[in-house]
Length: 117
Image: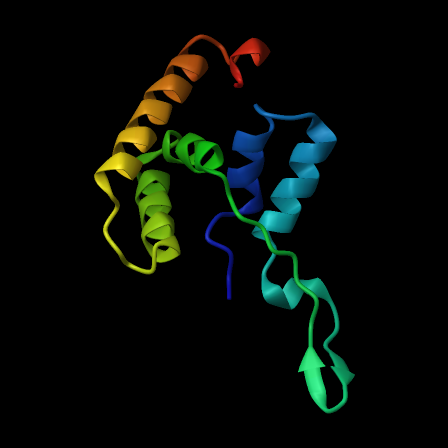
């Protein structure tokens, strides 16, 4: 299974939120596919492969969605899949729109570090 967002896309957003080394590490982990995680191990007749489990926060998804229309559409698909195809509640949509407006204003003001709450 391929991850929904590339290293470059994630790094572009994460570098605004954290130190360089952290942005690189998280973007790398979140953008690697299951097959990138090394060998398959066997134990008691069962095969398994350790994988990194990354859940992208709403803030990360919102920042991705602000980069382009194509990313916005992919973020919406990702969110729909995360809800197992269920419609978004009014409360969820209202909170998303509120945070979207806050983060857009934060970007428009030059991404000051004191605005990351």
